[in-house]
Length: 184
Image (cartoon, rainbow, N blue to C red; front, top):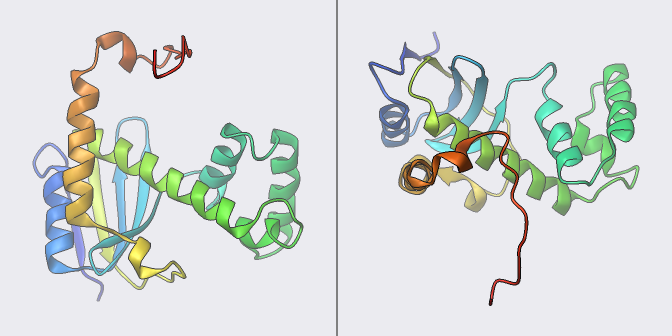
């Protein structure tokens, strides 16, 4: 029987969940559901392998981020998603042979999705979590995995800095514009 941990974020905060999983060096899937989002995270011996918002299919967050950063057009993403429905390939394995992107670019975007998801996760203080111990297939270099303790230190610092910023910055409608060179 798989080990499971369930709870409410008001009673048992996400920092405590990370700390427990990290200290116990657990491997499995952590699912966290807030009021408007559902996030999934794969952990291997207490370190984060990947994290992503739950979407209509397992590649949706990666595809959305590739469009957001300008590496794919929305039309090209739709074409690739149609090809995915026809087979069992992953989005990554579909794009590389077709010359859409190289593995380095895809890995960088996957890391960006993971970082953004972790930041969202650490800001949640309401909702529920469920951790299920299970094997996590992964092919990432173990030096690129994120230990739970490091996520807590770095992530919670970022959350504190974010909360300290002006209220206008935290609104979704805020758009930043470069006004000059950094040196000036």
